[in-house]
Structures are given as structure tokens and as C-alpha cells.
Image (tube, rainbow, N blue to C red; front, side, top):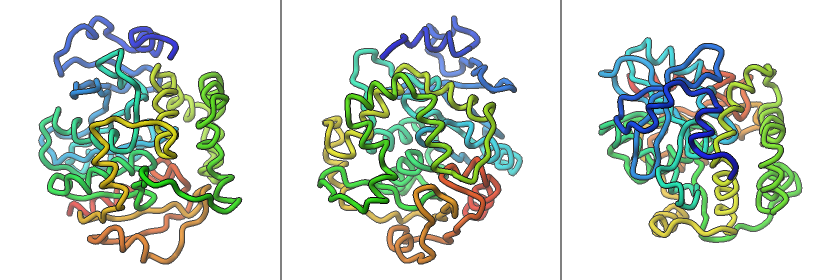
Length: 333
């Protein structure tokens, strides 16, 4: 939708536009939306050119940090530096449809079912030659991390699951929930309408900010903080990716044929057997998490800890980066 890939990169403020024609993996460009210039690297996978930031020693053990909707990699700004200082190689990719991440084939349908974003993690690791790594994610990023741990446990040394188990059953239609639960998911029902498509296209800045405010009600963020992430929502694939994700999970849009068997496997809600710590924000706008750990313990069979984090909502890494850093260091000690 809207502007072309080249126009998007130019308008968003990338330096070194001539590098777009160069396919070497060591080309860099700058994502100028941030007050302090951040070096953004790019790597090609079979489907995407993924933009990412890297911190720390290239020889350190890799940690991949995965953001969610509607956020971007700036959510990890308080997490990456301490991990890098501890000697780790920290990789923070933009998910498909966000920031500088673009599809290689301009004609391919923009799809984003959960199996696809899980595959993106493995493709990203393969492109960088990573055989083993640790993962932390929230929202879509946590879902991608959970799927990676389920399908490729031999490659995931540890996982910090922010929000708990996040794998969906996209095969069997679910029944309606309580009035309160349905109301919290208003955006999903909205995106399943044509009005929602037009609304997200025209009002993405307002919609995404409203979600930030309601999902993390105790978070007093500045206009500058929001704007640093909001530029990522101008990616020309953002609307298509968001709409497909929320329609596919409610069985209102087809997925990619190559992921049909994986979605059937994920519908069984497989357990995660890698060492894990579950973090849940106490002030999450979706409701305060239960004090009962049994549900998380059942899904994460090697769970080492479960923590309800005070002064944190849905975007927990931005509000309490210290708790994410502590959990990763604890798992990797």
C-alpha cells in the first residue's frame, strides 16, 4: 500500500541510498528518526531484507530481542546496552512490516501468520550464521520466540517470555469471551473490517498511540519516545502485515501453504522445553496477571522463574528493562 520501498527508505531518512542496489551483507545505513543516530544493518533471508541493530562483541554469545505490535526495536533501548556490556552479542531486528525490513519480492502477498514470524527468526539466525542463541520477546515477538523454541529447541539456549505462552490455535474457531475480554480486543475486530483497514491506513499514528496508552496505563512516555517508534509504522507493508495477522488468527484470511502443517502443530499448543523465565507486567492493560504460576509452569516445562513485574504494563522492556536484563543474565549464567 502507498509509497514504494525506495520512497519509504528515502523519506524515513536512511543514509547511503546508493547501497540499496548493493546486496552485500556488510552494507550499513542510518535510521535517522532517533535523536542519536543508530547504525542499522541489513541482512537478506529467503523472503526478507531484515533491518536490525547490533550491540556488543561479535564473538559474544548471541541474544535476539524481538519487539511486538505496535512497537519497534526502540522498546529494547534499555535492555541491549547492559547485555552488551556483559559480553553478549545483542541483535535487535525489525519484524516484517516495520521500519527498514522489506520483502525481497515486491509482488508477493504480505502475510504475517504466527508461523511466518517464527520462521523469520530462524531465517534471521541462519543468515547471520548463528547456530545457537537466546531469545526475549513481547507481544508478536514473544509469539515468534515461543514458536522458535517449540520447533527448534536445539537452537535456543534460553528464552525470556514476556507475557507467558503466546502460541495461538488458528485452526479451530474460538468461542466469544466475556464482555470485558471482547472489549479489550476491539482493535482485532476493527482490523477484521474494511473500515478498520481504512482506519489503520489513515490513522495509524493515533491508533497505535492509543494502544500504547491503554495497554501500559501507568507508562508516562513522551511525544519524543513515541515518535521514535512511530516512524517504523510508515513502512509500506505495515498495514497489510497488521491486517493479515489479525485476520488470519481469527480464520478470516488464508495463510501461506508452506505453513499449513506447522499451524496444525501449533494448534495443539505444544509445550516449551527450553530453559525459560516468564515475566508478566503487573499493570498490563489486558488485566493483572494471575498470581497462580501453574498455567505457565504447565506450558514451560523447564521454567526457572515466573515474575510479576511491578510498574510495568504490556511494553515491559521499555518500562522495566532491568528485569529483562536480570532474567537473561540469570538464564545464561
